[in-house]
Structures are given as structure tokens and as C-alpha cells.
Image: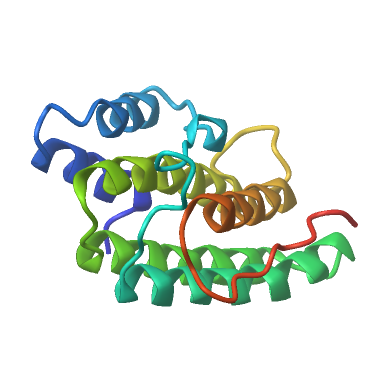
Length: 163
């Protein structure tokens, strides 16, 4: 299975050059920098429209993150459990990238969010030297919260990232 970075890079290369935010994610990923959810914008003050594959994938990431974050905060996760969580999130990330079809402006915003999730996955996998794996789960939880603020997903609940 391809890594999250490979999927985003491949997707970025496949899209038209007019999507500068997607290009920025690819550049950030290539240089080891993370995309920031702070760059997300609303659609003229409204949340972006979602589709069923996006909602399905995000719900599964949300569920896994909520469950795993509590255990991580309690110091109850071992390396295998962090790896399993990263694989679960990566599976949903891949599903979203392969199946989600949004209008171009919403898609560009989604790619900012996906870059942040990808960065979190890399930290959870232990690929970012000097960063505790728990911080990757927190980053993914923050990305989930940013998703809920910027994308229309009925019933979406904010994840409490405090411990």
C-alpha cells in the first residue's frame, strides 16, 4: 500500500496546476513540512459541501481518533497500537483520496486538511524525529475539528483534545 505522502503527491501531480493549495501540500510533503489547517477558509461564510465518501471516511477517522486519543493520553498505547491506529487512519485517508469528488474550490480546501492529517499520520508512525507519537493523534484530532468547522457534515462532534 502506498504511503499517505505518496498518495497526496500523486494526487497533486494529477490535478491541474491551478490548484495552488494542492501544489503547496505536495511541496510541503516533499520538504518534510506540514500543511496547516489554519489556512482553511469557509465558502463565502458557509461550510463546504461534502459527499458520501468524504463523510464516511471522516467518520471512521473520527471514531478511531476519539478512541485512541483517550488511551494515548493515559499512556496506555504501545508501538503496535500506534502503528495500527496510523494504518486505520491511512486506510480511510486513501479511501477519501480515491473516492471523494468535490467541486474544485472545496477540493482545494480538503487538500489542506488532508495534508494536516498526513502530517499527523507520519508523527503517529514515529517518522518525525523528536516528536512523541501521541502528538500525531492530537494533530489528527485537531484536523477533525477543523473539518467540522469548515465542511458541512450533519451531526459532526468536536473531539476534546485536552487530557
